[in-house]
Length: 178
Image 1 (cartoon, rainbow, N blue to C red):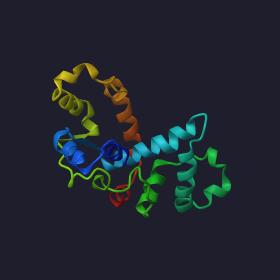
Image 2: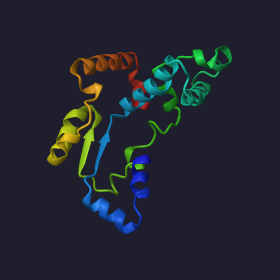
Image 3: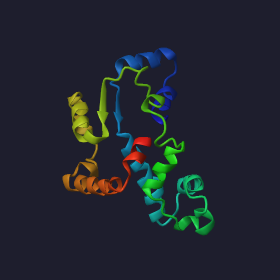
Image 4: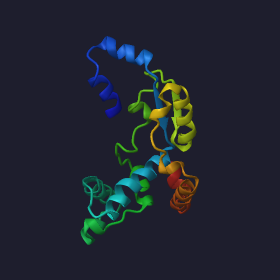
């Protein structure tokens, strides 16, 4: 994982790692598992397809999913024209499909049982959680990053409604299986 390896790469000894883990403010954000999958679908299978180019990841993952969920689909269509439904990604997962963007619980990547985090935030309450974290460091106030588009109320409402549309047509048995 890039975050953890960058900490280790910039550290010369195990003593420095221990010192950083003891003295640095450590935080982690979690996300609802279905939201992680929906985000993967939007970013890797919808947005990459709708852009002017087809990202390498789209070209890698779409055939892998299609082969397991719709074996005849790849024979019938040009890969650049296939729009994989969100439900098909869930079906792929329900039969054991794996991808680093959704598979594996957080303990596989961020070690919450090994590292003693000072704060655990949720993506769903990102703005409030970030304000809490930033308030812990008042001397760094001037270095705040730009507000994310997600923090705009109207933008957030639009995203929520779009996501609810994707969930609305799913069967409860598929959701429970995933």
